[in-house]
Length: 304
Image (cartoon, rainbow, N blue to C red; front, side, top):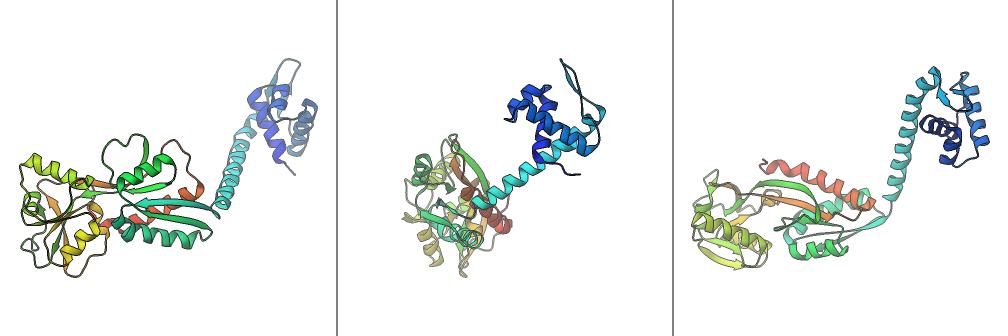
């Protein structure tokens, strides 16, 4: 018995349209051609699938039994074809991803390494730029995926969470608070901070938290890059308050990380893209790599 895809498509079209003429139009064939396909299918199966009259086309009992497995077969075949086309599409292309400098250096680069190994013919553009510039690039269509903690209204974007957890304290191992398993916001704020300068969105969030609690932070140094904050802590210039991906970063032997409690301030790192623009297969592939890469190390971050 030999069945053809065209015969199965014709059969389903007649079942759903209830008319040979409508079914023929649907599958783009003449009515006589459709009738030939149905007769060939019935001959191959050895059963009659339809009762025909001048007014009606009704499925026989055999037709009713055959319809469900036929639909499953066509759906499975459609998915298989789609998967093959997607696989082929992922063999070439271009994707542009962006993150703030520290996140780009410590996490995005490792994602790109895995991606390049899995998809060597897809080119990757890496941008280490501030959060505001990432949002502008996604809006303009020059960036496919952005990574970071983005403040403000994000309703125009597609948001995919990566890491959600508490703010962290980064301390020299010789710091007076180093022996504590967790540290309050007031303790870390008044211990002498190395902190991002005003105007940075993360600094603005911290200042709002300080104001709510009536805390006057003690600031040792202000700098513009989180990587510089880390270097200064490693050199013993003070302690720092870090975003939740701090635990994903390789830590210097002279420093340690502790969760901040009382209160626990929760923040998140997300992937962000244009909600109105369909992602390319290259972009989909990078998203999958990013989720996998983070899941491998996210156990280091307390989640809620």
